[in-house]
Image (cartoon, rainbow, N blue to C red):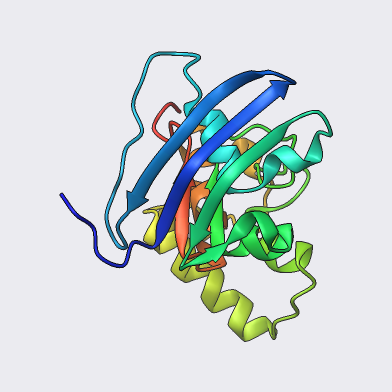
Length: 187
């Protein structure tokens, strides 16, 4: 199938954790807009590594190298400010545990978790707009009715599946061009 005007293009993308040994070798693919695309393969084949490269997470570690081109709307994201890339390419990790800034923060309320991306990016919103954004994002993941009376409780009281949906709401709240999800149904 030929994809005209793909939203995301991978062109000979290789990723290495150690010099001379690629974990991902020359992956090329065109990803259509407003479609679900699955990357499938056995455990350890590089699926998560590839997703993290698209979101520029590897740059947090000096020894990881990414080569090739990753184009989002025709713009090479490997030559774009990483924070701008992360706003355009939302990421949901396999587990909603706290660690990187994009995972559930168990010190924050449900409300604050949903709008955390705005705070991390220095984007200030009026309270009414934040309230609307939180409600809309939680409704989009089917979590609003379950948490609307507990918005200012920490997200740790939620079940694993609810925490994962909260992470998805958090990623969706920034209205990214693409949403990268690493085994989002595992929880």
